[in-house]
Amino acid sequence: KNWDGSGGSNGALDHYKETGGIYPLVVKLGTVCADEESIDCYSYAPDEDGPVRIPGLAALLARRGINAASMRKVEKSTAELEVELNASYAFDAITEAGADLVPASGPGHRGLVNLGNSCYVNSILQLLCSGAVGHVADRYGGAALTADVAAEDAPDDLLVQTAKVTRALLDGAPPETGDAAVPGTIAPRMFRDLVGRGHADFRTGRMQDAAQYVQHLWERLDAAEAAEGDAPPSSAAFTFRTEERRVCAADGKVQYAAGPRENLWSLRLPVEAAAEETDQEVKRRKQEEAPTEEKKRVPRVALKDCVDAWAAAHVVDGRRWDHLGTVSPSSVSTKFANFPSYLLVQTQRYELGPDWTPVKIEAEVDVPSTIDLEGLRASGPADGEELVPEEQEDVAMPDAAAAPASPADDPLVAQLMDMGFGRNGCIRAVAATGGGDAAAATTWIFEHSTDEDFNDPLPAAAPATAGPAAAGVDEAVVSSLTESLGMFTADQVRAALVINGGAGDRAADWLFSHMDDLDGAVAAAAPAPAPPPAPETSHPPDDGPGQYTLVGLVSHIGKNTSSGHYVCHLRRPSPDGGAERWVIYNDEKVAVSEAPPVLHAYLYLFRRADVAVAGAGRPE
Image 1 (tube, rainbow, N blue to C red):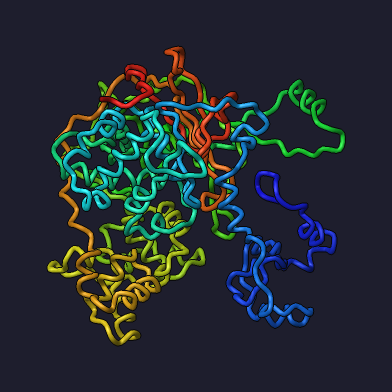
Image 2: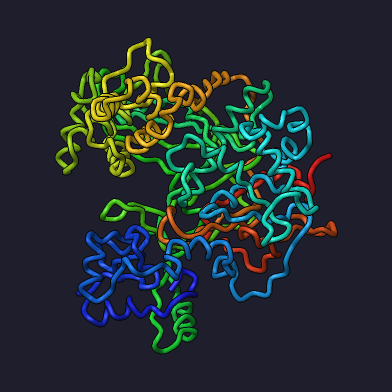
């Protein structure tokens, strides 16, 4: 069966279970053909549980009387069916399956075509560009950004492509171009290709994490907007900073430190704090369930518990305090330095399983329609607090008198290796996290253990004269490819690695496919130099009262963020000027929502109380 309940009868899975799990491999006969790569194979084995490639498949089929060379493919593979399912998917639990939803149309109610695993792009575009965020609508909804741009420059101009999509979403008239199969929809092909260009994941046709995508989009937009003038970037409406309060356990002195700029508030789900069912609730649930029905209780966590867990003080061991000249634990708590116009909240619904793959946390999050975060506003030093001398800076150290000269010399490397990790991977983790924090280094290892270069030696620091194109490229990979290919210079190989995100196999393919004019291709594909970062004080932070209203949701259906389906819900003004209503945006389908899945969302968009409600249409 498909993940929405449609599809087959689960015959193969039932057979696997009934025979004691000794026959896990399944081949979809309708996909058998001469091309073994296109034959759909699946394994139900617990350590695989997904599509697989079976070596020597043609020979195995021949032993069972099936001549693959003489057959042709007559059915779609499960991967192809999933793409089709995303495009024609009728609403399920999150998309309000079974409800008699009323289609919505007009300004701010336009669907986006699923281009194949692009629902994560569509959901973020609807969240930001369909009118719910007034700052984006005001900036990109008019005609100014597209007025003086030559047609040949438009495909490579991110501001133009963003303005095209935003104007199309805010305009209620049918688009000049779109999907003929779904009239009135928009196909954001150029936008998707441009935003994903040069990125190892977003340039592919695979499903990606919507939270990572929105952060990548802000980075690209910030760079493009900075080149156009000194106006605050669009992301400023989402940007906040935090303030850490560190209390030295040895003498009680306090130090305050400003956190980095962020545009996504990520909250852990404290499932251990989930409310227990009362006796009355248990009795009512059992009465509602069928006698033979077995239901696993899904824990419910209040958003307040998530916020409290984020703000709670925690102990950091091994912090070196220069004013003491020794190491002492510290108690660290975090608060907001400013409250932006819009707050995008990510609930960490995915954790690393025993095999280091993301696993979804089955939990409901009780999110109220309004929240008050004013109690989390940072106020700086309080009266009577004794502060750490300003000229002294503390350094987190693992019981050492001074920082090691090289990550390889850090004692934390040996500590991580005792956990079973390889030496090179441990050195990379220590280098990436700055050393001294075992928890941060362990988390980095879990997140990057599947990287191609995870177990490769850490490359030597690039010389000061190295060009920007070489940044982030593993010189060991450059040397290996240059030697193995034998027909390209180190500079050409290095440029190919930069263009292909450091992936050696893709870099080799790129080099061979551009041999006719390799130097010209390198020059054309090389990214433009990034604009210098704006000074920290160039724009005052967006700040206001800490009261917010929930106005948007992005929900995910699936076992992990690299598969499944994304759907967006927004609170939008009624066309007749009435109160705001919830609207569901499921790719091409746009309808008035009856029951937005607040309990199950992955991303939550909050609007500050003093920010005006954006209109439905685009500005003139």
